[in-house]
Image (spheres, one colour):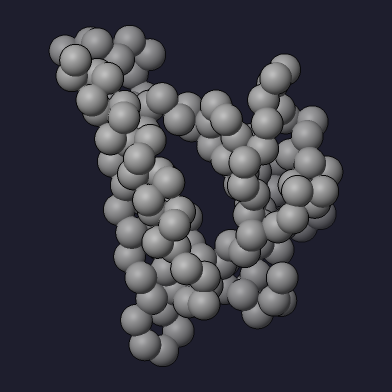
Length: 141
């Protein structure tokens, strides 16, 4: 991973061995990593069940915030490709945070991931959009 890309807060994909070393302790039984990304200390992985983010905090990075976004809760995806200059690419997930997804008063949140200009986000957008569309179809059935 490029040091300058990490400083800029941009994610880069990591190989399966690195992914398992980084995220293995946080996986549920039967959960498998599909894709994993990291910047200098932080990162996220996509498993067969959820998106798992790690936010290492403080000077030493020993304090870690772990966040999970269930793939079944993702209902929309936005992609923004890099422009000129120092722009980066972004993918934003919109997901339901209400435990009962059939509630008439659903609450939503978003989570944004940044990638370096050279990273092709189109495949990741399609991956998440397929999941989101499937979820919307299921919720409205």
